[in-house]
Structure formats: C-alpha cells, structure tokens
Length: 185
Image 1 (cartoon, rainbow, N blue to C red):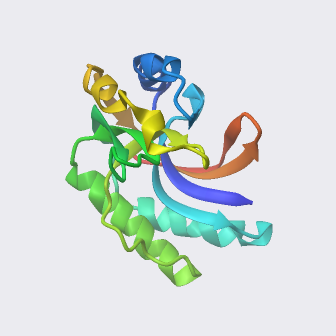
Image 2: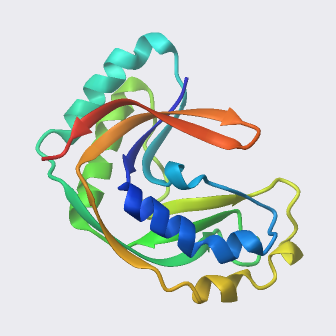
Image 3: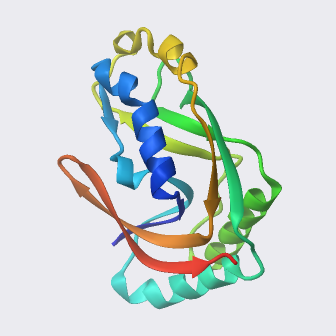
C-alpha cells in the first residue's frame, strides 16, 4: 500500500480551491492536476508499506493525535516549489499555525521509530494542486507566476481529523482512500 498521513479539507474548501484553480487548468500547462475531491494537506508521506503494518501505523497515528484539537486553517496565497524558473509543484498556501506545526512534529515523532525517517526539510504547510509532468520544460510555464498572483482565494477550513491515507496511482491521477481516521475534538 502507498500511504501518507494527511488532513482532509472540508468539501466546500476543496470545491473552492478547485474553482479558484480553474484558470490555471485552462492554461494548458504540463501539469497533472489533483482531483478536487483529493485536495488535502500532507503531514507525512510514508511510501509503500506492507499491509500487515497497518496496526502499528494506526497506533502511531493515535499517538500523534492524542491531546490535539481541531484546527482552523487559513488557506491563502498560491505558489510553486521549488521556484518559478523550474516549477515542480503548484500549491495553495496555508498560513502559519502553531497547533498545525505541533501536530506535524508529533506525526514525525510517532512514525520515526517505525522506520519512517523524519523529513530533512522544514515543514511548509501547503495544499498541492498539481505536479509538473516529467517532460515539462521551464518555458512551458510562461505566465504561471502572473496567473497565480491573480487568484484571490482565501478561506478558513475547520479540520477535525487526521487521516492515514492510501494513494492508488491511476492514469488519470492518484485516487485517495481513508484507511483510518483519528478525531481531533
């Protein structure tokens, strides 16, 4: 199973982001766009994991969520990683939030002893909207920076659960399925 830990956004926020990014999708960029219902905030990518490890992953998720509360996340701003000279990921930003950073750090702490190394890069909360195709050239993204700057979407999302997600790769993009959810009261 290909797994990751995520915060799933409410449907109205997913729909709003999908609509806000419509102009980007119309630009015919060499990008595979995330389906609207698949828009989420990844806390930790686990990769391919044997089915029989699911119990220990569920326990680690429970440990990470213990004591955490529901999060009120502010989505605002759009950009790319690593930069506009060679964009690989198109994203919507999430305003800094101490409770979110603590939860992400706890996920790292709980999963590290299970053989999932902690992320070397600093946590930069974002929602991936699309990924550049392998054959994309920098010139293919002309106008992207300006187009992102024109998107005026801001929304607050109340997130009341942290999820162990399964990703199944298909020709039309990844399909996500919740394997287990821990409530954030």
